[in-house]
Image (cartoon, rainbow, N blue to C red; front, side):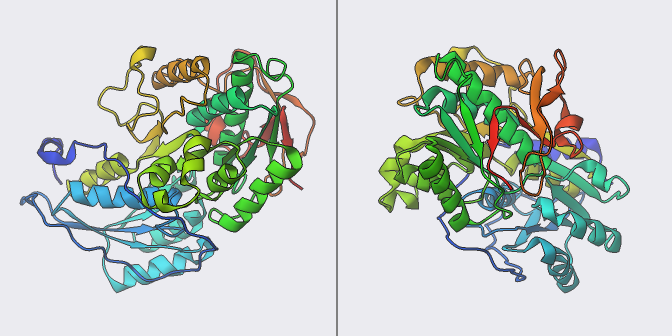
Amino acid sequence: MASRREFIKILGAGVAGLVVGTGLGYTLRGSPQPQQTVTSPAQPASHAQVTSKTRKIKALWVYVGPIGDYGWTHAHNQGRVNAEKKLQGMVETKYLEKVAEDQAYPAVKQALEQEHFDVVFATSFGFMDAVKRLAREYPDVMFYHCSGPWEAFQDLPNVATYFSEFYQLYYLNGIAAGAVTETCKVGYVPAFLIPEVVRHINAYALGAVHGAKLMGKCGGGKNLEIYVTAPLRSWFNPDKARQYTETLINQYKVDVIAFTEDSTAVLETAAEYGVYSFSHYSNMLDYFVHGKGAETEIAKKIARAHLTGQIADWTPIYVYLLTKKITGVAEKEDIWARVGDFVPIRWRRPVAQSTAGKREGAAYLAPLNTEVIPAKAVEEIKKLYEDMKELLFEPFTGPIRGYTIDPASGKQAGDVEEKVPAGVRWGRNELWSEKSMNWFYEKIITLGG
């Protein structure tokens, strides 16, 4: 087994430069089909030397959507590509895309039977059951599950978990939404109502009230309405996402819309109707301003409609995990990367020097639209972004009232009651548990059911 000294040596040889930006993609329409073909990307020229104490490993990524969704899957794929470049000569990567969650087990098993992989990255919550089965059948393979709770795998020594967390960023998005709304109606289109998405919705709603109150709008936030559609029941369904977005706009007069869906559909639709939206997982503004999307008719409208957003750079996480595997120090662990994690200097900065809206770490805020978001709100967003780095501000600090929901439909399933008591700050365990994160903030109007 490699020593800690060897691990640090490899980091110093070029692996330590962890922050790499995402590249460009393209928009896809339609629903994904199961895909079981292992894709072998072209290998970059190697400049790193594999020493006698290290060996080249093979890693497989499993994606629920297409790599061109320019959302969740695109971000993971960019992380894979960037990690392979940084670890040149030490890792070979391949991937499966458009793998339906109920087909993950046979798809990955087929890949493992065809060739040896040292590492498998399962990048969808719904791959959880498949990972459990496969980890028992292939004890010599290290499995990494993205977005699943570590408790679900605690009896499996060869399964680790990781996630780039967004609830803090959704709160800041909410501030922007509450600050710019003219109808006093903002909305959200969710994929599913698992704890991850529910905490993001609640954080967005809490932030929206904060933003409206800050700007003295909507009765100081008291008259703000937050509409949440029924879940899409799919991570990637651009057509349905567009339909739900149009419903929010046309029927409920919503003029700012956040979402959890792995394409640019909500942002594009919002821009077409002249309302505001956000980036999700990838820098969608960059795609429409500098990438292939710049050639589309909607590009100029998106430049105005895009307020900010939540972006994940999986590169530092993948480099960290792969480096530990290469050097023989891989272990069972849980990574929950939030604002300020995986950055060279994680401590808060003065507002004037805030890095809000700039690329950094594993989870960061998309560029702020300072032409639309009022200066007072921009300053508040920057201040809280910096405070979040040291957990000096946390969105889920009581008192917070809400009502229990049916996670399948989003329908209200209980009366409004206190969910987070005064003086209590929720941490990781409460935010991740389906037993505790099963409610909507009291000002949310659910359209589910």
